[in-house]
Length: 347
Image (cartoon, helix red, strand yellow):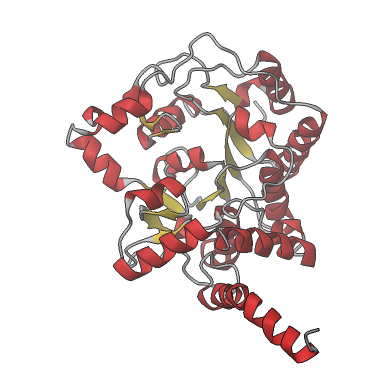
């Protein structure tokens, strides 16, 4: 029968890889959730780890609000990033200060929490742009993946909320495929195709920190060169992705109605001038009429703009980077349509 010291040594030996990885997680802090950071996306770095955009957006908002005094906010999932703040400013009063408060795979629940957070901080919300779609509306609970776990600040910064963030990040760290890709990128200082497919490491886009804004300048250069849409992989990505005439199932149920009304109530208290855009998706699937009716009843017919289904944007692939994300070109067109003629608040 093994003695206790022998058992301890054997157990320690068995656990040593786990303990080593755990120590490396806290030392490296790959997802930047252990320590505080002034800059999450350093432009000097050759590659970045895909971070939790919900958390980074909230931390950046908190850190930079005293300097910029944000009073105009864009809410939504990754599709909302294609509404450039410079374009939006053309339709806002002089002196407005915009911010992208978005997240990957944003949920309606997290969007509601962000709106509540702005009010709870005592910050004015004079202008708001909500970019939504059927996927966002369907999510009435907080996401749990490492790249879109809700920021603890939005949940009162409780120990439970902080634990959720750390657990999600640890779970991603202990993925051996991620560790292999991370080690490979660290040693070679480059991103390889297999890393992108796992979506744990991403090639840097241009990032403008004052507004928390991504700018796809590299892809736009390829489009301007006239070769992008002729590339075989891009043609394959678009092939067979459109389903004109299809309608999505209804997604807005009792919990979503409550969350949408909570957002509406904050907007009314803040006397916010807002617009709600249902994103144009390349698949051309129309938002269910019942969902649209709920949105119009809660927020007003003149405040909800439905670009789902078949229209001039979704019929032209040149408005899209790939089937899941449209370009700033589309966002610019939508802004020009929903703000002209400008509708004063309450009209």
